[in-house]
Length: 376
Ligand code: 13P
Ligand code: SF4
Image (cartoon, rainbow, N blue to C red; front, side):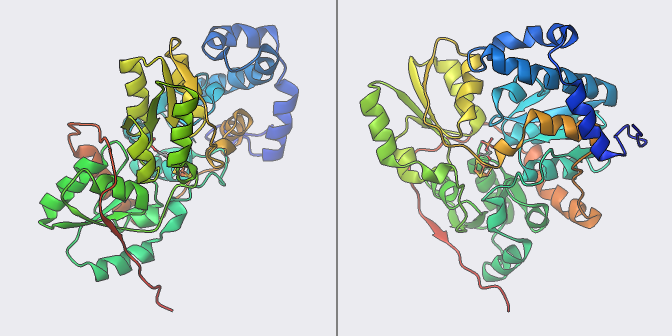
């Protein structure tokens, strides 16, 4: 097989065929992976582990060989999250890791906007995403052109966008936020721009949940997360009936009436920390499916009630895809350098803000959904 200067297989097809012959559960694979199995044994039966382990061994070997790191979001499946991820966390933590890593290659085990964020923060590094189709309904709900029209409609109001947006949108943004710092970022932007109004885009539910925690006037957008918007307040009441005393933890991308039924709402890391610190007897995480598995590993005494709403985009990331990315350099995330320059400022602003408290959410606040008409 031929390789280019970064050590990726030039003949990509040959790279794939190479995988198949190498991927047996050999003694060498067993030796390299045995210490990893106990963490995930409660979710992955042994016969299934024998299929995953050869990929895990090959990925971990290639990472060392190529000075690559894998950034794994909390929604990755346990064999990715616990067995090949070098850094794991919510989208804010992953952005911080990307900004600090001295690896040459970043493989994003997450969705495309996360990989773009890594590329914006590390333009000199090779950033790979194992599947280009790993999108996000929030990121695809708004464009840079929409933001320009909104700025004309609301002059003087700072633009705060969720990191779940494309690089083009970030290039039009004043400051980014994630669900773990949204309330603080909105208040900071209002002070800094001397404005009582903030454009908070594109998640209408997160916007309403933020609006409940601040006096700043929030103008938002009709975007939503296709995973979290499926939960209903009645689902939660039903879970409480089925498991009396269950503690309900929800992600703030859920609609406000869902949060009103929850005991706590925060980012994926906020939820994970809550479980670690409070050790509830029974808990239900109102968020993407894989979170419960990943948090359960570190909290063996907590019983997780598991409703399952999968994010189809996150689930496109698999061990074979990660291995292929490391072998072939597929798929490299590239962004126009001028967009990188402009998109970096709002991310840097967010990362520079001292986060004094994790944003928490309780109930619905007033947020107006803006409409702009594209020019024809
Ligand atoms: P977090 O920042 O809470 O990890 O959320 C990212 C995401 O995509 C949730 O759906
Ligand atoms: Fe986007 Fe929702 Fe999937 Fe997160 S869970 S990546 S917000 S679609």
